[in-house]
Length: 83
Image 1 (tube, rainbow, N blue to C red):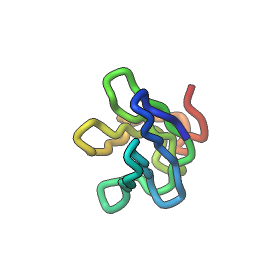
Image 2 (spheres, rainbow, N blue to C red; image 1 turned 180 degrees about the vertical axis):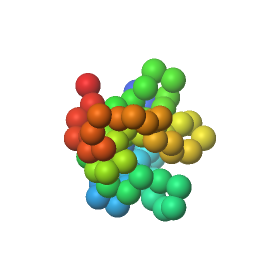
Image 3 (cartoon, helix red, strand yellow; image 1 turned 45 degrees about the vertical axis):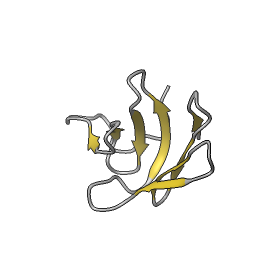
Image 4 (cartoon, rainbow, N blue to C red; image 1 turned 90 degrees about the horizontal axis):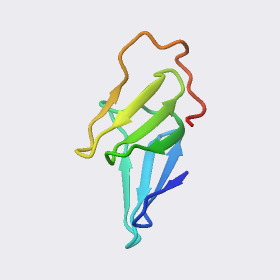
């Protein structure tokens, strides 16, 4: 779990990624164009969210809501922590 400067909370789940904004509204990121099992996450300086996954390695959710895996090769497809 990580918290943005505005108080929004990002939560990794086994079904994707969830965000609770400062007004209490939930937004979820799941589906065909998204990585499903999220173990870890951190915020990038540009507002993107870096995502550690089970099976898809490291991914990046941009400010437009598009999730993309990092280019291969990745040493391990399971990423359980990001520092």
